[in-house]
Image 1: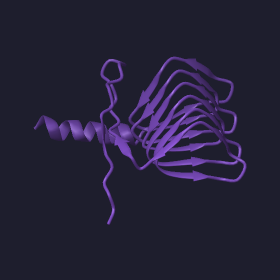
Image 2: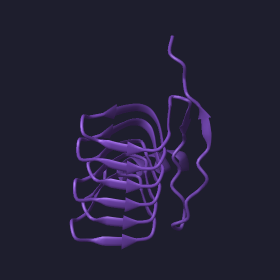
Image 3: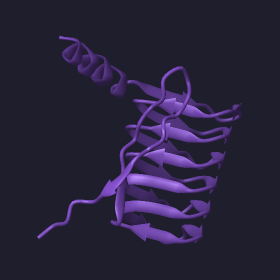
Length: 143
């Protein structure tokens, strides 16, 4: 009975959208089940079970864990994306990338190591604002 209610709540949360506007600075970690767009500055880690878009004016000084991500701004930290990471022409990444699929468009800058398809992390959002340890599991192999 409770499992069905928990799934409904998680589904409702994943449909939410969050925006950090241009000129806004946040110091601290962000965790969400829904989509998030950052056009401002975040000093801390970002975790989402959905899509993250870092706009052209964005700056993130911290690690990122997301299901999908599109980067147009600057990131100083590790990027872990369980599905598709897209680096747009204005993207600047200073840190390692771990992803299943990667698209790097002409002009994007990336300084760091890259691992693809090795392991996919299960994204877990913490209770009471505390992030839980994400567990790595082997990626499914295609035939």
